[in-house]
Image (cartoon, rainbow, N blue to C red):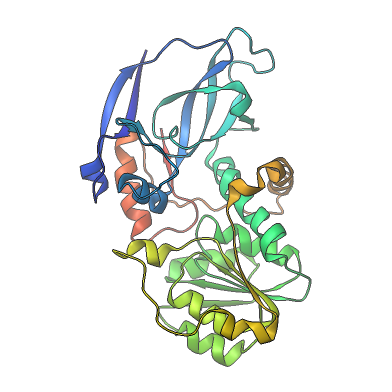
Length: 334
């Protein structure tokens, strides 16, 4: 059986230059493994770009290197020693260097059983899981607090605003297009929506939320980080969940000025960073909660409506996400 893959063949500045599609014969399953037919893969364009540029130091990239992290699919073959998985079982996989291919072979212990191999469950695991764990462990929002979320209409952001509203917070959502505003309005979870192309973020926060941000949830960085930092409340928490603006630039901005603690020490405020893999032991709890909320209709999952199909479409989907056009999670159907 042939397997079509998108692989990195060398480090380069662009995805088109770094990667190509190959077809290989599938190797024989070991007794502890499963063969999965991927149905959807999630696009993580910023991480992918750091990877194909050779800027992820903890990944030992051996060319040709299959990349992509998250997928959902169905089990089509089972190793001899696997006895708790059936052919046709829908599964979710989250493993660096596995997703961007039609089939994947994976150890049975590394799969997550899901009700259906749909784009919604792909969004919930791991993106939704990240939102849940970041709020619980790093942001720690309390009832009545104000949380401001950047990139709020993205795959992560639209989950975060809903979970924050479940905590009975005052939710401020930041986005950049009328389409994203409409998506956020449809969630019925946002008390204030800021379209940064129509309103100045710093001006709005300085005027309406001066020293009132209990939680800043930022995946953008740069000017967004600065605006959140300037208006942290006493005991406020600024959570860094991404660095999209900085990662887009040729290099990180070199800032000359007072250290961060100058502006937060007297407030007892803090800057915190979130990484999903540091809370691996809590991921089952997060999945259980999110799946239950989704199945009850108490949590909406938004998948971008732009259609991408086939391994060949991953490049276009990546460009689309990097261009800031996405509303919800960007996926490719295989």
